[in-house]
Image (cartoon, rainbow, N blue to C red; front, side, top):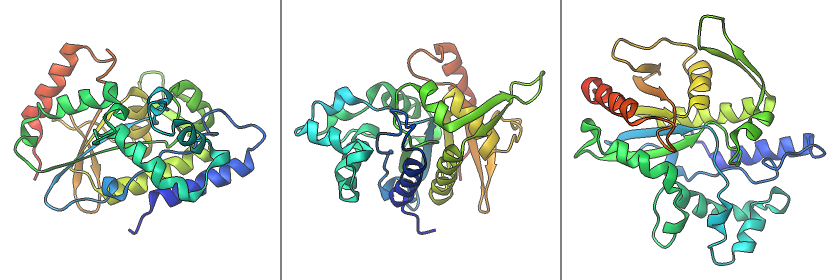
Amino acid sequence: MNLDVNHEVIKIWRKYYIDNQFELSNEIKLVPMFYDKTEYFPEKNKIRILSVGFNPSYVENNYEKLNNSEKIMLKHKWENFECKDVEAILKIDIALRKETENYEYLYYKPYFKPLEDFYNRIRVFQRKELQKSHFDLFFVRGTDQKEVQKILINKQKRKNKNSGEKETNLTHFGEDNISLFKKMLSVFNPSIIFVFNAGSSHIFYEKILNYKKMSNDGFYYLDTDNNSIPVVLSTMITNGRMDVFSRELLLWQINKYLKLV
């Protein structure tokens, strides 16, 4: 698949902005999250690790440290956006997800540093060539997940009284976001997927795994044409959402049962 994620997501934003220009939330007034092709095209002979979040935060305080910060922040407003701005914004987006020389202060350490620490304790990853990427289910920038959900989800309810499973009715905009995420997922073809967010885990379980039950080894599995990808569904391991004992138990399970060819 010859996928250009940034081209696709710009088309989604243009359509939604035209259809809803008189009732736009603060979040949709920002440009979407962009991705470099090296983040979603697989590298040969590497273990491909994918972490999945809900949506990207808009870390305005970090942007204020940039040279020409006012100009950059103006480019983040969709009403000012031009396609020629993608590369400048993308450079910042990449620096948010991984430490980049000269842009270290942009790295979103509270979220991504604990992920790195977690990966370092997984035995099957040690002394192996790794390709690590992070995708969000939705491309909408915004720190308040509840506010973002208002434009992505029409309704969410329990599937039945005796189950923690949920049924989610997405807006057309939410469906378009998920559809693009699925394309990225298919192209990247990860070796393993970590979903460390409760809201993301519920939607991934429903929309991607189609309520497929957990395997006896404690993993969920996403079946593709080529293989069966182990999936870890959990809450956030950052900001105290997951206690130290739950984290140690999860690491024990992964180290005991995870086998990657």
